[in-house]
Each structure stands twice: as C-alpha cells, then as structure tokens.
Length: 516
Image (cartoon, one colour):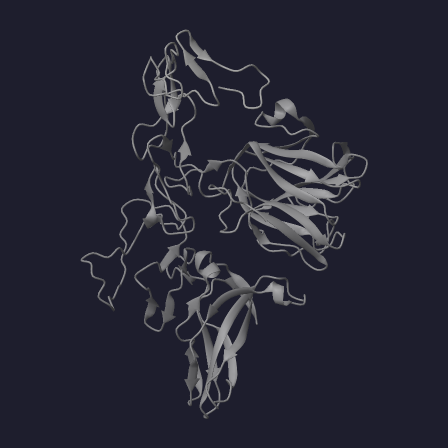
C-alpha cells in the first residue's frame, strides 16, 4: 500500500466483507523507498504485529492488541509505503476476505482553530472514536513547537479509565522530548523518556546545549539499486546522532556506479560546525560529501548531477575527481557538474577532508596526514570557499562511487550542534562531560565547570594541589610511600626496585623488567 503522505503508525483498519467466520493475525511493515522501484525484502522495516482478528459481520474495525516492534517503539518513523503480512489463522477458519487501510489520525491531528499546530501520537497510543487511549506508561502526544504570547490557558479533556495508583497524573509537560534533559542532568537510557533524567556526577557537567564532537552518524535513507553499503558500529557512550543505531564508517559494496549511491544521515547541523572525514577513494577518487536542506529524509534522486541528481539538489557538495582535484560546481541548489573550474586537493587514495561553516559560509579543507585535535585551518590546506551563502540547518550526507572505497568519521578537532538543541533550555544530552584539566564541578547537577585556584590542578573534576613530593630515603621495599605534600598520591616501588637509606635503587637499563 502506498500512502499519500508519510505518517507515524497508529493502527490499521481492516475490512471484513464476508458473513462467514474468518480469523487472521498479521504483521505490519513500512518503507520509504521511492515509488516505482521493486521493494525487496530488505526494503521493509518491522513496525507492529496484531492479535488474532475474527468476525462474521461485514464492516471495518481496528487491528486488535497492536504491539509495536522494539525498534519502531524506540524510534518511530513516518513511512509512505506499508505492507501487511499473514502470520497465522485459527483452525479451519478461512483467511481474511477484504482489505486494509491506514487508520487515521495516523501521522498527525491538525489544530482545529489555527490549522498549523500539528500533534503526533508517539510510543503506541491507540486512536478510537472517543479520542486517543494512552497506556499511562510512556504513550504521549507530541505537539509541534510554537511560541506563547501573553496570558495563555490550556485545557485538556481526560478520562481515567484505569486506577493509576497515584493522586496526581501529569497531563501536560512543556517542551517534553524523549531525548531531552534539563541542564545539569543527562539521560542514561538514550532514547528513553525525559522522566529518567539524573543529575550529573561531581566533576562532570551538562551545559544544556548539544555542542559535541562529530563522532558518529545514523542512516535515515541508504543506497539503492545495485549498490550496497556495510557499516562499522559506533561503540562509544556519546553518539552524535539521534538514531538508536550509530556508525563510524561506511564502505561501499555492490556496483561501482553513480546511481543509487547517496546516503542521508540523521545529522541536521545547526549554526557553525566542523566535520572531518577520513576518506579512502582509491586511485580514481569519486567520493562526495554533501549538505542538503534539513527536510531531506529519504532517497529520491536517480543520479549524481542534473535533473534528479543528489549533488544538484545539495546546498553544497564537492565531488572528488581523478588527478587529485575536486569538482566544486555544487555551490547552491541547482549546480551542475563541471560548471565551475576544478580545484586541486587530495581527492585520491587516503586523505582527510574537512568542512567548516562559519556563519553562512562553508569552507573545504584537506590533508594527507591526520589533523589531530588541531584547528583544521592551521594544519590543513584551504581548498575552496563556497560562494553561496546559507545559514539555515543542513542535513549531512555522502556518496561513495567505487566498491571497497569508504568514508569514516574523524572526530578530533570537530564540533557540531544539532538542529533544535542549540538555543533551548533543555538539551539532547545522554551523558555529562568531564571537566577539563584545571577546572572543577564540586556539586551534582552542575551546568558548567569553574577554574581551579593558583597552584592547583584537577583530578576527576575536583581541584587538588599541583605540587607533590615523595621521599624514598629509608623506605621499605615493596611498601607504598605517601605524598609528603598532600598525602593522597601514594608511590609504590615495583619490578624489583629496592629501598635503602639513601633512597630507591633501580636496575640498569636496558633490563628485561626494568624497576620503576
């Protein structure tokens, strides 16, 4: 079934058009692959399953006892194509005779007064004739952001259908988001609700602004046709993207062609940013990194350039070319290949490619040696300054032409702010940052770190004296020697170091196991 618009799954209606008893249990799957393509098994994503449905009377009814898949429940996705699969029937009952259709309100319910403030059911609430049924655990209605003005009142009609065991029930939570926590707190279960936020520990902080290192990406729409991609999973504690599954590297498989190769990530970058990739492009280059308008969430382009081209549709993109050069013709939406002179750069083989936006201007840098955590402008070569000016959020994407070539996140010296989290009072932060050396946070729930006083440094986010001394004269072999300045940093002779009246004796280097 192809829907007229992408929508979050709520339920489905099924039409029974026979007076004979029928019974069936089904699964529901969704896809955002472009219409006209053959939707193979790998094109579909699990959404939900139903209980057995049966009846002898013609008419429409909702799927019963819908259970969302774990992936869909954690990260609901709006799909345009839907597939219903038979799972089982009962005894000698025949299969369903009829059809299925999406049950409204599905993706959103529109504001009946102004018409522009939409609400979306999330985490599996059920829509019925009398309204929407919430489970009292994690179901909620997400309301589009809007700016309050003047005196405001909010009214909700709620019926408690079950005993909740509490005298008060939260009906409205301003700015509630499943990924946000207040400043000074974090969510230990990434993808959980904001209610599970906990205080940052002593020595750590959360400023309330998600400005982080570019260390991972998720994929919202991948390769098509004869191309395929393999990914290396991100295993760190603070992924960059909002998707539950994050990666650090994409390697191309399938065919070495232009069509079907673009991959849109879940990173919508806001304001100034620096992103650096480690690129392996072989002898003929042909890797591309692009920045699209934030609305791009699915693969809809058939080629690289021209009508239907993903590079042409990009706000900015640079295409690596053989002979160590870049085609920077994609400078503003509508650019076409070879319309601007090629610029030199390390586009072939192994290289490091960095893009930095400052205000409304994007700059391209590269190098053949890793830049480390240095300022890219000081250690990499500036190759191009894009002339088109654009300061709105952009979605990061990339294209890999040849089989076995790859693009990999290179995180030192990078900085990104995700759309929607840079100027709000709550932040999508699923961990707290450790205070830098020389700074401290001496209380839980800190939103910033303070500088240690003179002659102090920091240890685990707590200020300590910077000077220490150990006197090994007359020490006992194998026993620890206390710090004579502060007494909390002990030193222990190991690997055969021996004590004497004059101090510690170490064996001569090189030894097989040098004392220390």
